[in-house]
Image (cartoon, rainbow, N blue to C red; front, side, top):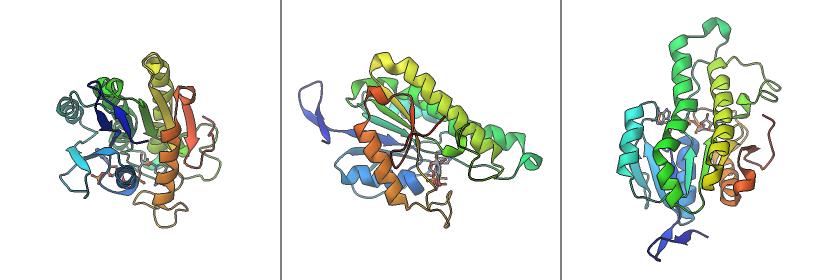
Length: 235
Ligand SMILES: NC(=O)c1ccc[n+]([C@@H]2O[C@H](COP(=O)([O-])OP(=O)(O)OC[C@H]3O[C@@H](n4cnc5c(N)ncnc54)[C@H](OP(=O)(O)O)[C@@H]3O)[C@@H](O)[C@H]2O)c1
């Protein structure tokens, strides 16, 4: 179902907002939702057309004033699903190459920005029907599983996704009374600029799996960590 009754009794399409929609997973999610009849608000750092009926908004998630401007531009717009997808990897080296500015920037984009965006769009979510926040996290940020398969450095990335996971749990607690469901989702190792050519999961497969989980999400799922294929991931 892709439409719902608005406060005036009219039908409106379900609405999803996706950050980092210029390429990779965010772009695929935007296209997938649009193909399913949703109104899509695709947030990008630079002006671009994603084609079809996809609306675009300028958003640099690393800039709190850009997040504030987006909130003002979308005042009064009901949003059913917010997907915090924009992310950066930062320096992939280990402890010896750890750079403090790089670390802070990765934390700002991957962990702080989703919180600021949720705060800016809380009224929009309350005006929506599904009321789902999907934080695109990573198994790399799982304390239990994140270091099982590889010994890459990625200190900033792993720490930022672990922090994002706590943001998911904390938001789930805070927003439960508003009927808002908050999820951490692992997209798999995806063939994108970030995942690289060796990655095992086609971007379309990942996006379809994530959308299926988001579409079915209800308050009982809030505060959980799931993989695109449905598997629960240990924190
Ligand atoms: N690919 C994987 O294997 C994998 C695995 C686990 C988790 N993830 C997560 O999945 C999400 C999407 O990753 P991806 O593979 O699609 O990465 P990607 O191909 O590198 O795309 C990253 C997206 O984030 C946007 N972005 C980066 N910094 C931004 C900023 N300050 N403001 C607004 N947008 C910004 C980029 O926009 P520009 O074009 O403007 O740079 C781009 O649209 C990320 O959160 C990532 O951590 C990916």
